[in-house]
Image (cartoon, rainbow, N blue to C red; front, side, top):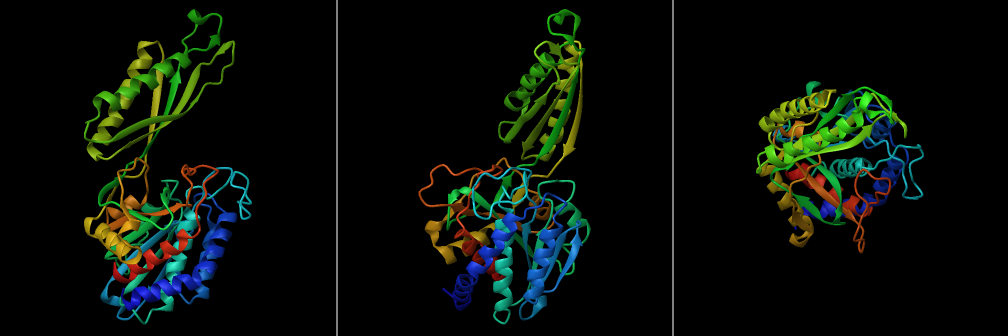
Length: 394
């Protein structure tokens, strides 16, 4: 182990409790996408306290700090953490549970921010020992694709200086605490939101012959659309089409005149993605027409699929092995979840890796985006070590 690695390990141990306390504050005071003003202010206060210059206002609440070592122009590594929470009621019972009803850091963004703040603390404390510049990107609105990464990119977050590489971590509840997961190449899916409105003719449930039953049409539409995945998608392109909301404002004796449905399409090929949009529209429209109704479709185009740069991903693997040992590093499979980090990866060599947060002995951890998500806070030390070392040697 090199002297720099030993110093990073020592500093991370020394700062651990301070950074855990910051994480608990962030967890207790979550803010939804585009509303992260207090979170942004908290981050700015910490950076100011540590003597790290920054700019704010990116995509509304984003903050970008710069830590410089010796010879700042030698290279620039960008490190990113997302800031927003989710509209979920917390059910963990933690002492520092969310104080905001219906809002929770249920995707681990509080941990991401804490790890990046910890890495910033380490990098600043040893700025005499490394060369280059590290750009600290605290990004809002990862959960809402109408802001976040693409807006920050348009506003110049990847300029002045231009990063040579970029890294981000994301918690993974099913990966043991103290482990790092990585994957080169395609890793996370694109995502689109589907909004369908099935129109029929409502009326009394006892006289269905006088109605055009939008509920039955909606059921046939959902069933028919599944064939786009099972029979029309290229078998070598992973594709998911799921519906999470079907709403018809009828009752036991009332057939509603319309039914609304919401779903998501995820895949790993942009050409097939565009073709699938056309097939979904055509299928839904024709099924509804064949049953005497209509179907209107609106597609909200979300994130592209994330492909991790090969060299950047290998650097993550090498760094993790050097710090933690090969038995604490795992290669990961594809995931159908999505991330707006994909926008950065289309601009510069980038890699998102996974931070294991599962406590020892817990076989069935609660998943991301649930009110019972629990993380082993000892993972924060691992995360700050990884980000600091990637900033120094990425």
